[in-house]
Length: 410
Length: 168
Image (cartoon, rainbow over all chains, first blue to last red):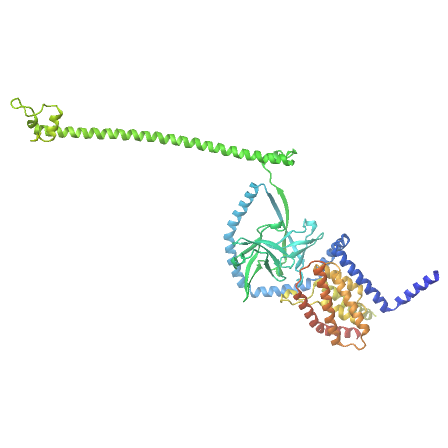
């Protein structure tokens, strides 16, 4: 039994003496190991994850060192290219700077207003610190568009952290190691970003096209026609993957004979990135001052208490509104009284004026009578002999005087 | 005596150059992609591995090729093991081709290379899309295969020059 086992071992050993057999064996085992590693990667095994993090730390640094000569050539190439277009780009930049300066003020106002509104609705205020990160590996693979930055979990970078070039969004972190992270660029085919297109206010999702553009997808039919080359694309914040209001790019209309395509041209040139900003967000809830005073108590933790608190607040607001209305009513009443007294005064005045006018007309009539009396009194007075006139002081006499003497038929 | 020692260390370094170049290329993705030419890309490690394993170069160890694959996956951001699998498959194909070839011919090698890289890229594409749900452009893969095929003949002449220097 033992001799047969020894024979078997000897046979294997002698077989492995041949170089071709060794090669076959090593190739077969390496293929199996590769397949096994792929399988574990697809199942996202912890061992593979840690192995990958370990390899990443070493490989990214090595890659950075190894890439120095190629990066030097690459940078020289771009520098030469930059110098040739230096003057034109300077002119463009100057124009853009002027426009930006004018937009800056309104932007500040909007930011302030936004903060105020958020405070009003008791929302979260995100205080964010932008951490400057250097790109250590930027190999523009034709298949995957990603970069490696020199900040990792040590610097509070998390999966999903937004990455900026100045104020423009360039991607998000998809893999975090201790001192390095991988950023999936917006131009990658696997990148999907919910966006708003202004000023049309169209909601859409943009997907990387593999080059330095993105395609607009999942937009409501018919809304695309309104888009122009002046339309600006910024993040909508839907899904809470990206913060809202971060500029991405502008629309580029590509007209074919058959149809019109709407692409997004990024503001940032991803091939020229050297440094980026990683936004480390810390979310803090806004509390009222009254809440702050009761912070130590556990009352606020109870949802019912929280609801009561909201209702009390509402009640307080309503009471305050009522008081305001009461004051307003009081003021209006006073005003009405004042106006009534004014009307009364005016009416009195009118009455007095009417009296004066009447007196004036009476006086005028009396004056006329006296004037005519001087002239026509002999015609209207009674005479003893013939008694044809009227007695002085009677209405008939007055009438006679006003008629300038007695008429024949009277 | 000292000149011999110098010659010996230089010779050692010279004989390790293909492997050093392989690691540099996987760490650096040496493929002129920064030129931003539409669709232009080629896979230099494929050419290097195919040629030197076909020639059964003594310092081109399969395990080191496997490690180079792991490094490539890390740098490119592919799932771990994909490139190693591809590289080892190339080694298997070249090993088989070397055994069945009686009279080596460069043109035959060239077209066999086309067959191998087409097959491997197809396997790569299938694994990435089916198992890892990656969105990939098929055209990029086809163009990559085409340019890798074209560049093979150019690099082969350089490698020949290198081997000639080694034999001398």
